[in-house]
Image (cartoon, protein in one colour):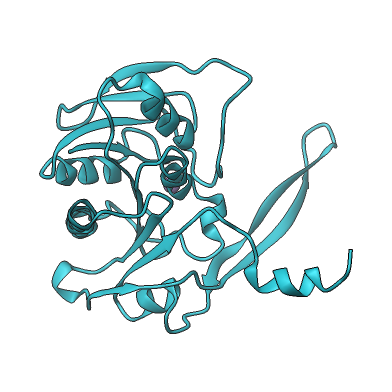
Length: 254
Ligand code: MN
């Protein structure tokens, strides 16, 4: 079992280290992740500049590789031949914040797992629903243990090649977590607002600011599971077709 570990927060992020340490209990682990933070960068393919890869050491001495590309570039590099051995599973995270509902289209953590699916390898993205304004160091251990158990099951049962699992873990002690729920995407409520300011030369610049987003904690959704203190596992595929609208649109007689 050869597992590729990546993330979108940068190769030296503590969530990646916690995840890699647990994945090592399941097989051989290769680490290739961005050399800087790519959070909320979406699904990227770098085509107009070269990509560089260099060796780095994580805090526990583990050898890893860092690229100046996006998370999805890292996965593509690894699966297209940078790693000599075939990769069986791609695990991305652990992101310090939840990736729920529409977040999946922005998330570098999730799009890394999407890239794995594009190349026919099962992908798992793991995010921690840490409280807003959390101060100090986050404890990634419960989420890392849960990620290991989920990856173990995926290895044992096999996952359809066109599916990734988007995992979100409540920020609780492990014995306080109420269980695991298989969910659909819920509804994120963004509270973004446009902030316009002037630079020292009097020219305007813009910042997408506003309050942190919330969500609708509906039963059966990723938001609903977290609100109940449960781990959320949402199976995702890349087919964004609206099957509900197909019939209606066909009836428009084009
Ligand atoms: Mn991130």
